[in-house]
Length: 435
Image (cartoon, rainbow, N blue to C red; front, side, top):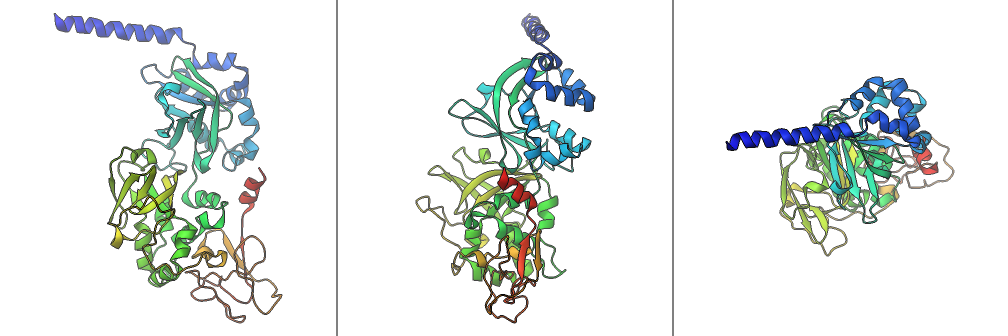
């Protein structure tokens, strides 16, 4: 008797659910009656009818959340560093992937978002643009001002201008900027490096590409191909502080590779976002070096071992990157965080002085080209940058001051007192700065 009543009750719920879904407009109905979605409608109808049909037929039992770009969002595509070229060249496959990144499984309304970020999988699972289990992630947050924000690749922010539009297959939020599929580690680090020099990631990026001989493969090969990565990247100030120590480590490329791998985690559970660490409990992760890291939360900050996480959740194509204020040492893994300190104490010998010219490994960055320029004076101008300053940075950031030496101490031809310039191919960077 009880079983019969339960079945009757379940059937009633199912019927009510189906009736409710049937009373809701279809996805196409929403597009038809929403004037500021006309461009989105035209793109789907004219170029991606299969995707439109899938959205139209999405069952109410498996609802989705659609982040629908309005007309203004599409009008701004030329300004997007990732999305813009795809639309400019009418790259059908890339645009399909971009559109898929706007679709989130599950019905996520305003009431479901929190004042802290949550990271949701999306329909973007194309291997060329995403190497994250269950689909590339996107971040959603409901700010204290009750404004819904979606954060995507290269720290792009897409505010919602209209929320919680229900349709038969789920819910729609209209956004004023397209969401940007995350790029690979080098491009993401390069964009972050438009910050002030001490807070850039150019040293860590260069170290990842450091490969003075063929006996050791650069760590970048792992960073660019391994799935579900979590990277804890020390900023330039952290590497500058231990300049000589890191230069000595780099004399053994295997030792440097092992040290860098200690900053990288690949987990079958997927990438580790900040939301995985804020429950008040410590989390232990195993790195690619085979050693463990401990993530803890104290005084409103996240720490990895004793290093503070300064910037959280930089989404990359194959995972996530967190910026930290110290180089991690597996031999000092038991060191506890010191939340009252502005910056973590260095675990290696603190013998470096923050200096643009001394940023370690910067001549190994993948977009750096070293060229000859006329020597205007007997002594070179130390520095790396975007003009004609001489690059005096060797593999460990050791400057060469001799006016006749080539390559500097441990340099790759990039540390020269003869006035060799390190010119960075930064067309994309310039474009971003003009926006």
